[in-house]
Length: 114
Image 1 (cartoon, rainbow, N blue to C red):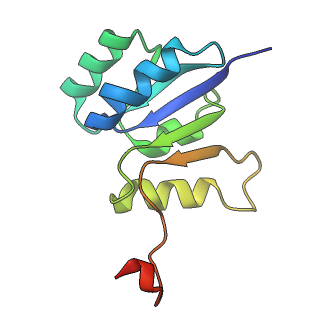
Image 2: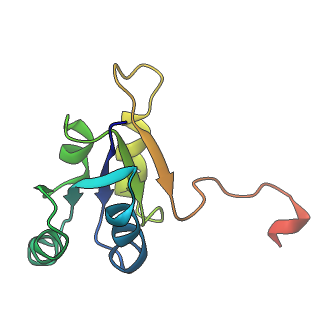
């Protein structure tokens, strides 16, 4: 079975401390790409985790053929949300699977939402 090639949108703490290590130790996945708007932080994490591809924008990672799925540790960022929504559009020729650490939708009148 081929491993799922993951791209990480942003070098947030949850990605650095939990998600990337978990994927890298899994027999089912490998982190092949990281996008970071902070070049120094991105380069540091790329070297730390031996990630083959580093991108300076979310859009460039999403357009890459180097990933099968993406993890979004920073869904509060309108940039990553807009980038992902455009890539995940039903009209996209090759949509990616995505996992987010935060909900991408707000509650609407639910008592559970306070």
